Image (cartoon, rainbow, N blue to C red):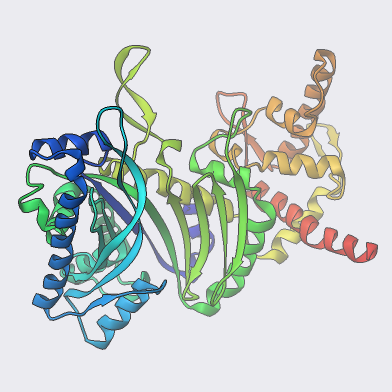
Length: 510
């Protein structure tokens, strides 16, 4: 990221990195059929009494929603269709000039995880099942967390969902500290002191999240005060979006550069390459869907690279903010350092990361690292004219230490394959070896004699890149890395080949 910022420093007013959209979910101990059966038995009820009992408790929750809205003087609105709840809530808040407190309560019939009673060998039993029930949406403008909502189904086991946005919380902290800023929706267009603001943003993960989330849960679920008073929610992170925003001076400054960034990300980054920025090195045992997605959106466009349920997005916010955003839905793809068991022994090591809210700090670390690597790769996008002039330096042969080294042909299949191989996204993490490039250029060769011959050939090709300062040796290793100059020149060649050469070839064939 430092390289990208330094390259465009005259156009940028600052950067800010923080969580964007966050969805927490809370599960009670009765979220599984067996535990629900034990809960029913503890109240002196039989399984056949399950439905009358839960209907009664469900009605209490519905009545609480109506009374909660009435006490605050706010509307209680049943929704029949698929209205956009957030848009409607914001409209109501603006119409009624709500700056703090409850905005409204929406109700909607939606699917939720619950139970159903089925016949058993000696008695009926409960099993987990999807069913539809009335769900309550409480929309607030919280003093600290700003615009947010809490969703609670009115049917057991009352799994709660809480949505909030870290940009709202950061605005609150900056207001307290007297930091001036310009904010539009969930993006800061300008911040007077970005470094100080970033220190505040970094503290977001340190908050006592179980206690905070419990406070919101008790507002909307009155059963926690009596029927369920012996229970507490276990909180997980259902979805996390972490955004790194680069704030440009104005729209005219970002617009031409953003078009080049889109072109570069779409044409030069293979999905399997880019998503290794998430810290995953793809290998033969990898299972899952990988892809790229380009989409026009008002007023611009965005590109998304996805791996399974995780991904990285790039888009412009309001024309003057470049946003790189990592989305984590499946945290088990990443690792966290913790206590765990391995080979029968309890050790401290790196284990798959779970959704528990205690791992929020690790979500931030993984996401920020991914965003940084992505921006580092985009640092290759510079003035197109300068990069295209540099292409001319590849064609002539060069002499080093009395030896002549041939030039490159950007339209040669072998040379183009070499450029693509060294630029693979996974190579930005650990660099690459001779064998990595050989396997990319000559994957079908298996005979040991031919492998040795090809290894020597690849060494000569890497030498051609090295004498032109396009790659550099990583000290005390057998690995290479692509230099900044190499990223700029080689990615420009690939972009020109994909964008112009192939387009002209299609036109000639047509």
